[in-house]
Image (cartoon, rainbow, N blue to C red; front, side):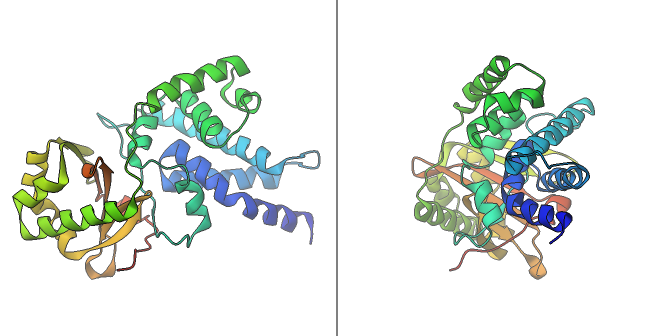
Length: 290
């Protein structure tokens, strides 16, 4: 095995972790893939003969690439008014894709990614690398151009923001029971049944593409839009969406929309819909069994 093949093999061993790091930093599947590919290009052009910890070296490279991408995103003012809508990861519960498991292992759902989007690029890098992937502050400091002490402060500020993010119920069976009930009620147009499974302060976020993200609050308003979800009720198939039970609409066998549900205190507290064609088309969909 020559040096190039050896490096390629070592890189593949680290690809799942690098994807997880990049996705948590960027909230975009496509951009995460771009960041990982850039890390490979830099690796293939670098002299790594003195690198002791290749995994750590690659994580640092991905961190720098992601920081540049986040800063460029801010400078171009690409963010729509209000929180952006991160890309969901859609996968199954049986661990069919190890690289997805790495992403989902620390997941509290899309709500966390929305909070991360509100952080500065440096805060997000420091928090994700340290709190989610245990990278020492001494290693993060050169990435963000701060001292280790200042980097620790960046992560601390980010942590205070993130700690205010509500944690969903972890009982997947209960999640599925409520999702099934919601979809059945939406399919039947049963307003009272919808109210029974919705938290009074439920939040619905729907991303349909160029118009950005629509946010609707309150059980009565969300239930009143049940017809919007009728196609998912009829054609939706259950799947895990960023670690949460959800549904994916597949007319003609092609994913057209993804919906995830956050359950807290025994009711649906958040609903996230992704229906933008370019984003739905990038989803790697594996469905839950009946």
